[in-house]
Length: 209
Length: 165
Image (cartoon, rainbow over all chains, first blue to last red; front, side, top):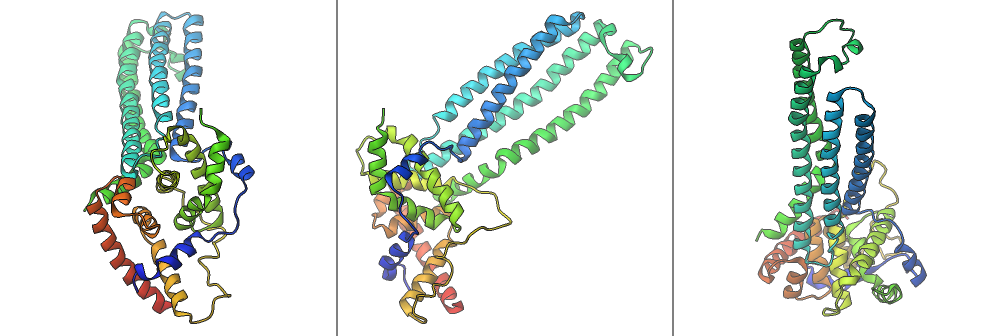
């Protein structure tokens, strides 16, 4: 039994469907929301941008109202860092919006989407991991020079030496780094990892001879 | 600015292309509906870049296949309504050899990878290896090699399925 021998019957079978849509029904579909992965990626980026705006607003407010110089420096600096992140996210969103080139040859389209998503994941992970030592350095330096600003009363500590604060912060940040590393990896894999692997499988299948 | 009316008219004339892709790539009715909607949306978004240098049908196939291949769904516990195409058709004459062969071959095509399904789809639509290669972004030679492998695999699987039926 050959594919060529039953080509016409197969074509008819594949084309068989329950009903045809009217032009009005087709027009109604154009206003729906896309469910593609690229569409979900855009929604995810919009959500992150909104989150960034809220975080910047909070940081600016804290820097404005706090009485501690160290807090003011910390939150001001990271408001600027978040503003840089906001710009980067906006650029990513713009590139993702232009990504919907579904009329490209299939292999090129897959490579474009997979490449873009891999860059996004790599960049996101790198930025998250970079923030931890930057935060750590800031917190340690500021806590050391203005130890009165460290909320020891929240931990029930009455008298804490600067060295004690630094040790505590060091341990805290080490645990945070390890947790952030594994959580971020898991989070990104859950969001995009499986999808990227499947796209790469398709690309490899097209590329092999 | 692309004209929505013009696009809808063209899509209405060629909607069978979208149905064919949906039927080949999705097993259940709800999934086919979702994919149909997704292909329609993506085609509309891409319509602005359609310059008319290729046939609309060829362009639509490219958009539909790109969308179908990149359309991944989570595995569902409840498979939903299975299309009646997969179930035995009571109206078919029992033991009609050609119909049995077609069913077996159709089931075997359903087991192919997303990439192979796209190539078979275009082959069944009488596209040349050059045209298939242009759509898929691979060489005509690569298409020929893949088609030979696909045909051999389909023959084997369809034969095994036919014996089961």
